[in-house]
Length: 443
Image 1 (cartoon, one colour):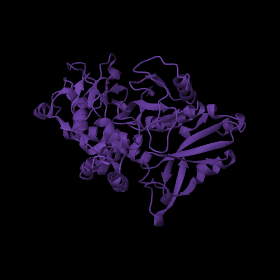
Image 2 (image 1 turned 120 degrees about the vertical axis):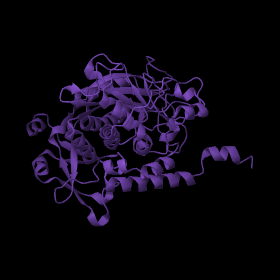
Image 3 (image 1 turned 30 degrees about the horizontal axis):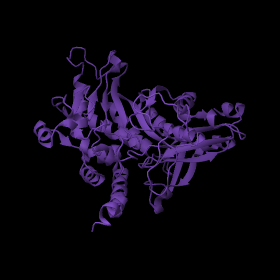
Image 4 (image 1 turned 60 degrees about the vertical axis):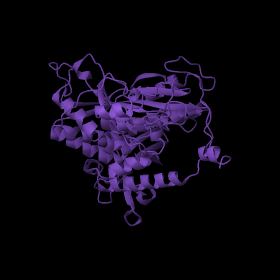
């Protein structure tokens, strides 16, 4: 790695870590300081980072993980290329910080490993490209008027996806598919499956790269779950699988649906605890506008707001995709949005699935109807629970969850709830343009 820095004239190495809410943080070091950083880490004030520490326990250490070293050749310039590494956040005594989202996911993966499982994830990441990002709350303008799978030539961002995919591939992040999504300006790029920690690192890198490539085109990329009232929102449908060594633990050739008992119990765990972990997979006030959108008769929303599973059913919360090879057996969680903290989201979904396996949860019958098309009475008769309808309800349900508290750890669990309650209270008190438009002249 040090030889690469010298040979490629890399002047800056960015050390990255993520706060509890999923915001990327970084500090740049000169290559000459890296050997010392590997030995001692980089000290920083944890009390200044969302959810990391209180003032009287503020000293923390960012310890670079050399396995994540990657050169960013597309960010080169007169000052030479740059590189990055993810960091594990440690306390002064060199023990892992309980507030580090990467450590939260590592703990969950260790629990899976104790049972002989490796956890793989494969995200389909949606986002919008906008001509600009107005700061006054006005409605932004998408870069195109395209629809699902349209072959668009962006007037402002020509060949954006091609260049974004090339940039990702050049730093070792494999892309499976990319295409235009349903709404104007909406894009989707699917990452190839990898172990969950690598995937979470890749999602954080992906957001950075996509925004950088967008800026180079003079446009803005946003992962906001629902920027437009009358258009579908952006999700991050995530495929999950467990492996025992080289064998896919979700596959059973003798089962009519090719699903093993492990897979069925895992899905049941995802369903039983879905309402409890929704505040983590959908952590923003705006997330619930995507899950419970305005009726759009001419648009596909596919927002899974009801707790059920189905085989090939895209209106279900958990979908079992068709697959050919046994190692392709997987389940897809469709509620998570692309603005979630991937470390915490993957951890709570894994925790819910493992709970189903440990407790032997029974999988209920699958839903093969369009759940959105059913009436409330029909959904209730079928036993389909509704996901929390807003952030306030989601954090109330999460607050009573022993499972989520155990997976996140006490520090992250408490901070996350406090932060989200404050966000809801601020939102609840805000007078919106909708209210002024509706009431100002009429009342």
